[in-house]
Length: 262
Ligand SMILES: [Fe+2]
Image (cartoon, rainbow, N blue to C red; front, top):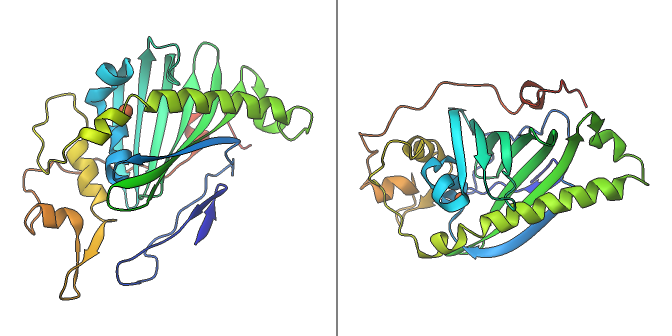
């Protein structure tokens, strides 16, 4: 068990094997200031896959995504993109830049950078399995910068901290409202091992190949195999795309555009 950026991470292995890798905290150790949780019908991997399902951003979230880049290295899968949303309620409203990092099956953590108003926030999305059909999801946010104001530093003042928490709370409300657009789809979807993907659907098969390293189950004979191997009849799909190039782990200083070292 580890506490990572204010959240509890628990390692589970089907045969009780010790952790094979560690989760690195964010370099500036920023913790969530506001969060919201709910129990929904879904699987952890399917929830996390939402962020690479580029094809649904426009029809479901009314968000145009451009310059989508992704890569993975070990337990980290990362993506960044420019987005434009016409939905005022969306956390992706207006023009923004988004950097996302999947940390194993633990969470998606990201940096949101808005252009008007110039603002920056840290985001987390956690998914905890409950049973075969349900997961608990938690969205958390911390507003980190507003124009020239370093909100992380200002929040250390007990008189100003409630204001930064309130701003972070508003952002949680927005992202939760945005995620509600996904719920009817999650509740009625059918998992296809080899979906017929169109150009622009995003690196879904690459993400599944990466995610396969985290999902294991026990067979009656005591052996362990990856869940997706079961779906594929014990062999990896030969038509999967190669995994993208490597990139370093979560490094807010490289993506905030405002320096860093907070
Ligand atoms: Fe979605």
